[in-house]
Length: 319
Image (cartoon, rainbow, N blue to C red; front, top):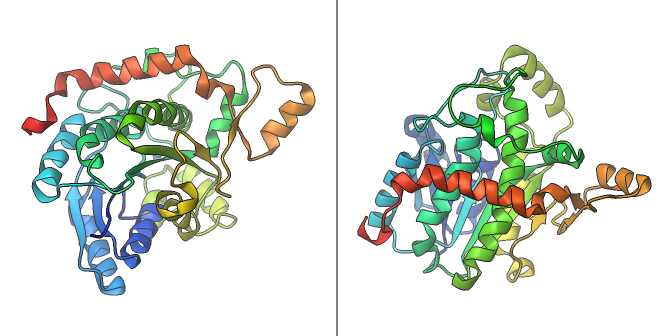
């Protein structure tokens, strides 16, 4: 039986490239996208190019816990197992104003963190039925900002209208959300170990952005991103990393790891490094910030996410 793969945000960028690659492998691919109409053309292109008829399109808004719950109900009605879950979708609209989701949570954090957490939790039962099931979270080298010992996630500003003194910045929220996703990876890897579900994360060091993504930026950020695109690799490179981490025998026993774009397992930085070690940590690709393993901050993260999810929690077997 072929593997079933869910890829969120599979209609553009790395997600789209990954959908092609998994389709070429003969996998049954579920494109989980917010805009179903806009994604239909991509679905048809993948089917025609790969000659794989098992490419499905399902609607989900990753910023909405209720939308994820509806996605799960539809998924369970159509499939009885899940082998690979890739949290690729992200809110990255640099320059946009402060926005809230339907649960009154800041949109960047709700899309990039709370959504993946809830989707992983609600799909846990079908993942347990999969063949060597794995969850892959996508982080970013933007988390290097957390090498600054003063940097932390501002949980106090994630609910309701923006209350901080400094102006709102999607860039800063994106940075915090990607660190939170690394912390969530470590937490879920330990939690799901008893079920045989591996949970890993990939640190993306940059990939050429699609026109669809660039169009969401304000002009200043769009111009900067276009300049960066000249130096960034095509999305197919990172898509191959998705496939390798999820399917290669090299990683069959790996869980709770953050990997760089060379597919090397990254290690935690020292809490109080020497000056020489600081330089090595900042310039190298082998280290992640000590903050990611801070137990107090991790507890704040889990408590925050669960406080959002609690009103929607229900025995999934009844859905």
